[in-house]
Image 1 (cartoon, one colour):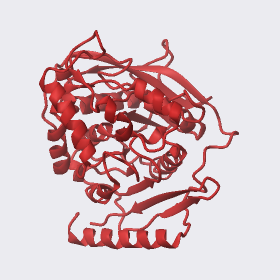
Image 2: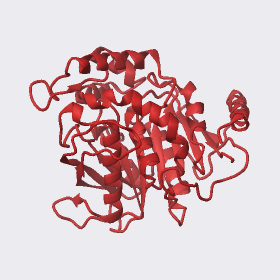
Image 3: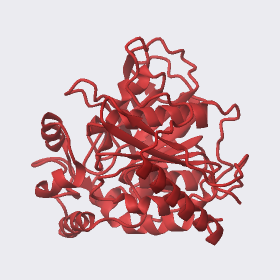
Length: 413
């Protein structure tokens, strides 16, 4: 698993991908007619406040300290209008550093609300401010860590399965038989730690993150964050709230760290919304990478990996190595979004991301009658595909003048 045999197949896949791109061939991914927004006849979106009572404990495979206290995590459940209370699947989205729930439901410019567009395509999303961010409770920064964030994600997954969370002002909370965990940037790290520690999800989506090969710019951001946290950090806001928080990216580097070709209105709004991050996430970041390298090969559910080809923090050259590390997954699908940097949902090609996620959910999670829940941390993968790694395809958006590159890999024993 992950040995020379698999690496040779990845080399052949990379060569085949380059050859197809050189020829400019258009091969459509199965199940995706075109990477375009959902038609206007699709059902609308219903957004309802959601909250989870969580315990800031750490039972994950990443050892790091947390305060063990009880807090509330807040966000919204966004689903198709008129969706039955027993809808099959919910995807829980975890944002990355400096961001918040707004990364998934930005409404300042029409068409950029990722969660609403997913609802229009028939999908249910749970978008939250992670503990320490936005509308959610805020412990002292050093009292949170990536391991406890993963445990909190596990608690929310469990609550979504059982319906044991607060929805709106007391509306009956639906239970979801299938729960997918999606993470962007540091949220991708948290999703991975949750997946290999608790084995309770039906699928995993990792966006804009790799465990190796981060850029010089990312190292500069991390160095700034580390220095600020080493001196005790700051208040969570300018003058108030808990201390022990610091910005991951200095204001002067935020634009080049997160964006490539964003709409000026979105760029200004996003930069204004960026927040300080808990210093506990900083101190547990490198231990999390080490834990990932030791355990991501235990994740045994379908995985979607997405990265922008202009990502300034995690260059796409590291994508193949990250995809190859998921050796226990029955299927690993990777997609590269052209012309997009780190903040995928806020870049002009955001609709390509949505189409990719929607198709993957339908074909790899919702089409599975058994649900595909992992057999437990380090458990045996069930129903794992066999056969050669394959090139899923490349869809071209001629009308928009954009190319969508995606590769679907089947890993063999």
